[in-house]
Length: 216
Image (tube, rainbow, N blue to C red; front, side, top):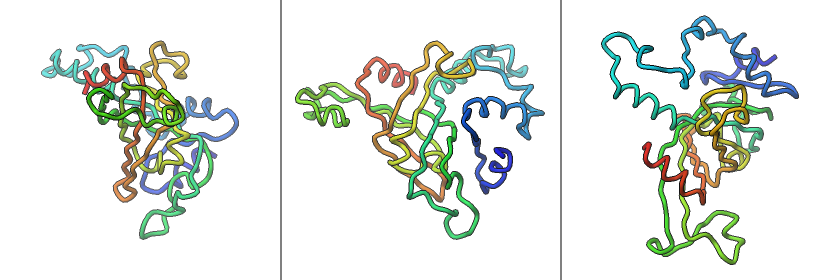
């Protein structure tokens, strides 16, 4: 069933999870994927070394760049479908991905990180927790994650989205030491024609913000 759904999603390449054991279906997809012939050449990032690069490209700067890009890459998971998600692509009748309610995963990357301090910016944190608190946090950060519009379509879906950072190995994020999971985006800006979205996550974890800023 999942295989057929993947083929019915128009021009976007999508990974669909079906059934009550959706996460298990995701891991099995590596075996049944139509591109599995090339999977033997995939190298888990935690096993990647300079020797894996072709001759002439075995440079430590290139290795460092690949590792940084890996650290900025996130796994996006969404278990909710917005009522505003279109039934078809703009200007045609090709079915738009995930018009039905099912779990889906995709990738994204850390686009930008901004830090704020009430001392310098003259404002306190605007997250939902701080809006309801008599003592909102005076230091906070906004992490912007770029992904595809067909994965996270709008604010409604963003509230139900999770982004796993530093997920380098293991069958699930919970089994990978060092994974940081961002739950619930505060804002999603979408360009459906270009199939792009940018999600904003507000955090009080200034160590995480600093770590990501150093990477970007």
